[in-house]
Length: 354
Image (tube, rainbow, N blue to C red; front, side, top):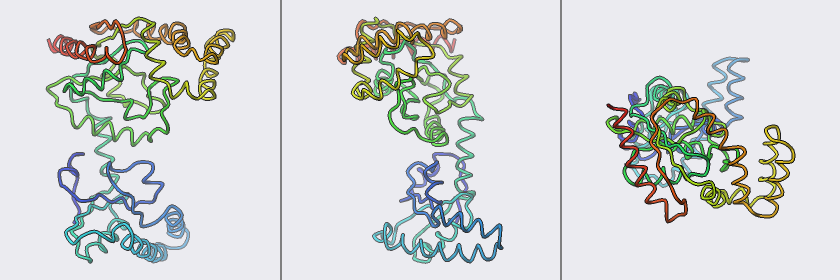
């Protein structure tokens, strides 16, 4: 039986024991339904081989080979990851379009006696719901942007707001990137996976309450923000954290220890700034980094690179702004700062409603 998806949350609500993606590994790696496990019925090479035979020989020959490969791979899954599944196990199986790959595997599982279902339209139907959520529909909640110059602890404050029951969308967590030249945290998800994470975040919002989003450019690392969200962020009222340069420099030295602990990585990032600053400035920063004075390095980068660009960007905006003063950004200071920011979010969102 094939289920027709009407919403992104429907799969979780239906309570399947496992969601199984039978597409090839490369397809799964690019994007998949959150929580799905990969049990390919054709690997990447087999899928390419069957496709070539379909086009160059005949559909019949391709289907015959495909059936043999699917049966062989299905047997391996049954003897391996599915060997201990009980009789009442209830899986949901999908492929690219809900066609032969998921249908064939589901038929085998059904013959065993498991209550298996497939997705009508497969991954493509689910992806369509993601596109609707992030590209076709407006953000369901009023947006408030958490602003502040580099080093204002916005990301940590955002997490503290969530712990206080404030609705947030943590775009940097979704993109696995801190949003700056120094912000890499490892491989980023594909654009499709980033959009899927965002779609699920949007689906969970209460439209009656504001949602706080950290100030970003139109990209977080290499992942693009969907147009609807980006436009909502540009027009949104802002809560801006104001903190002294010295406090921000100390905060960045703590928050970016993963970068400063890797001299080669730090030097490579500083070299990327060469087109934007005189050679003597870059060499000065490299010298400060070599001395291990990372707070001084952060202060210099903010004073000469980040702060001027932030101010130039803000000067073009005409949106309500509520400023929150942060005398310090040490770990002990952040809880009280988050309380003040939460109050300001409520204040600026009420003004927007009026």
